[in-house]
Length: 132
Image (tube, rainbow, N blue to C red; front, side, top):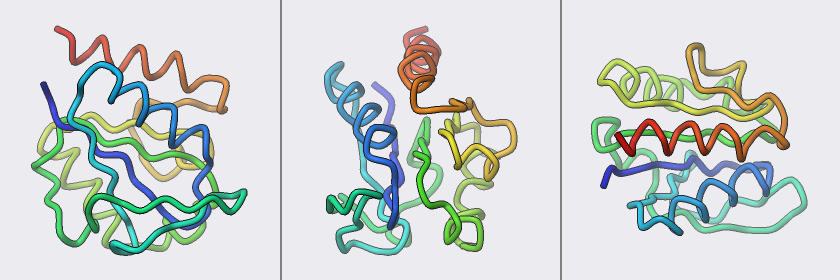
């Protein structure tokens, strides 16, 4: 099965982070939580902390078949050149990128969920792509 990365950053939206992580784990996918700002915990918009599996600086774009960017407070992400370069390189190498809510504007050409309510449908679309 393919390797999926889900980005974690300060101010992520809980449901848009946990739904893909849990759904992918449920089907036995290799899911890696990637800390944009390092290996320390990041807090959600409601203040719930999550510890990443790996810091973004310690992973490589070519490791992933797909990358997911949950919405939330994406202001810092928009200004993070290393994050944008990571996504660009992954996309160039053929990784499927999914971006939810506020994150959608950061990733041209991504599979987009405009609102949190759209996340389950977009995850079904993503899973169908990798079931082929």
